[in-house]
Length: 334
Image (cartoon, rainbow, N blue to C red):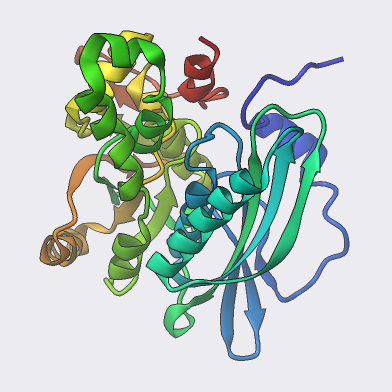
C-alpha cells in the first residue's frame, strides 16, 4: 500500500486514481481536470464560466482572507473575472463564536476588496483537525468569450513571473518563534504584511487584454519550480527556468535561510507565471509597467525534445523535476 505524503497528491496518482473517475461526460465542459490547469471552463449560452475549488490548510492567522484570494487568483488566470464565492468552514473542537466571526470577517474583507459576492457554503465544528480549514469555491466569467489555459504555452514563448517568489509561504511561516527571537518584531511584521500582496487578479486581467499572451498560471504549492514544471507538463513542451533571474525579496531569503528551506519550492501565491509569444513581449511588458506591477523574464518554453531544465543560483544547468512536497510543510513541522 502506497502511503501519501503531506501536501498535494502526486501527479501520477492524480492521473491514475482521480482523472478516470469524473462522472458523466458533458460537452459543455471545455476544460476539466488536468495537471497544471488552475480552473475548469464551462461553455454556457452567453460565454465561458470558470470554476475553482481550493482549501487553505497550512495557515491559521489569515485562513479566511487567503481562501478568497487564492481561489480568485485561479479564476483570474483563466482571464475570467471572479464573481461568486462559496465557503465551507471547518473548525476544530473548542472553537468559539469569536473564532468564527474572525474568519468570516476575513472572508468578507477579501470579497469586498475584489468585488465578490459570498453566495453560500457550510459551517461546522468537527473532530479530527487541530486548526481551522476553509474550503473555498469560486465562480467567474471570462471576458469577451476568451479564456486562457496553462496548456496554451508554446515553444518559443518567453516565460515571465510577476512580483517575487515565496510570498504566501513567507507570510504563513512568519509566525515561527525563531524569527521573532532572532530578527525582531519589525521583521516579522514585514513578513506578515506580504499577505496583502496575495492577489494576482489585477495583473491577470491586465494581461488578458494583451494579444500574444499564451498562458497564465498561479504559483501555489510547489512554488516557482513546481509551477514552471506544470506549465511544461500541461503544454506537453520543454522549458528552461533561470533562478538567477527570479526576484526574491530579502524577507523571504532571510526566512528560508533561517528555516533551511528552498525559496524556489515554497508556495508562492501572489506571484504568477505567464508566457508570451516573441512578437508581443514588449506589449505585455508595457501593459504591466503601466499598472505598476513588477515582473521579470525568467526563461522560455522549449520544444518537448529540448527537455525541462533550470539554471540554479550557482549557474549550473540541471533537470527540472516535478515538486512533490512544498517547502511550507517542512517549515510547519518545526
